[in-house]
Amino acid sequence: MGFRIKTLTPLWTRGINRECTKLRETSILGSLRWWFEAIVRGFGGYACDSVGEVVEKCKFDVDKYKKGKRPEELICPVCYVFGTTGWSRRFRFEVDKNSYQSVTLSLAIDGLGCNHSPLPKNVRWWLDQTLGGLSPVVIKEKTNGGILLNVTTSDSIIVDILYLTLKTIQEFGALGSHNSYGFGVVKVLEPSNVNIDKALVFIEQYCEEWRCDEETRSKLSKMPNLKHVFKIDFRLLDDDELHNKNIGFVLKYALRNKFKNEYDKGFAEQLFGSKKDRPNKFSGKVFVSNCWEEGGEFFFRVYGMLPPSILGSRKREDIVDTIEEGIKECLDADVVSRTLLNFEEDEYLDINLFKKLVMKNE
Ligand SMILES: [Zn+2]
Image 1 (cartoon, rainbow, N blue to C red):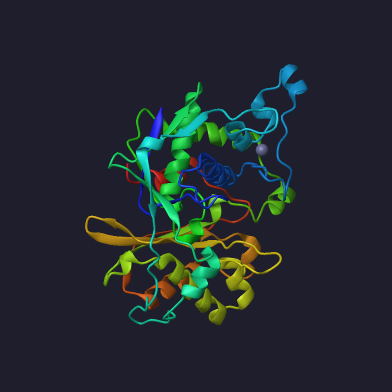
Image 2: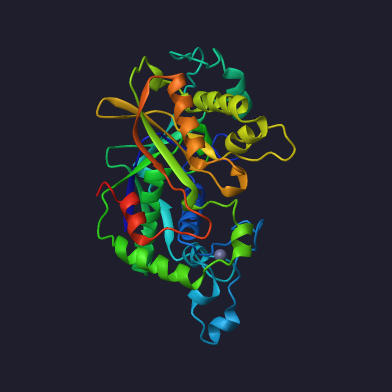
């Protein structure tokens, strides 16, 4: 069983080894786990923290299992699928290395001043600081058939869940690591024999058994949660070779400045990440992709999650409006699709809404 994905913006590859030109399975798996966590929390279920910072990661109690407890009673839905101590991942995963190629990106951003532009004429220094001045090696599919992600499992529900997760990423985010540099917007090709409804029922029932109490929910409030997601897809109206440039970097820089001016510096940092040289540096909540082409036109995406912990008294809707406005101040673009989920803390997604959001193009 396999999924094929088309990269709209390429996938990031460079690991610790800067010579690395292989797509690392762990970065794809990490990304799938992260988004599945967000789905589970969106449905009001408990998903532990895989790095154990906010709450402990689940541990599988073998004794209880031997005494007849079901795995679903012992570990959260995310650990059930992706594994934890004592319980292995429910599937084998491999990226077919014949289905992709590595490409060195040239970083064209100098002189990227747009129409009404508050953009700095040269943000190369910023890029240098972010990437260490190197040209990133990225991954694209070799043919129109896409990159093949092979999944082997004896449990068909796992395939359904992974497909659903990939579709969520297609709709709201990006795959792989370093999405904050504009990489990883993907489209899932050829779904075959996948039963979304089965996956949704499974997740919803599991989440009902693993409802978060208020205290746990508040502990997890900074963690990814689909209830807090927003996404705006833009179309470039006046291309002017902009699509060749790494506009993701530059637009994020411009948005950060806008929020610094219109809100405050602390909030801008919460949204777009702290400076790299800070001792307690943290990553941002808002991402801007680079451009992709479809049918001769160019598109890009701004997306992210706005958790209550960073909002304070600010309204999600206002923030997303400011983002849209900020982009339109930088360049000529119109909105082709905008989604904002804006739930109260004691509400959660239901199957029908989720399905409508994620499967709307099917
Ligand atoms: Zn868990």
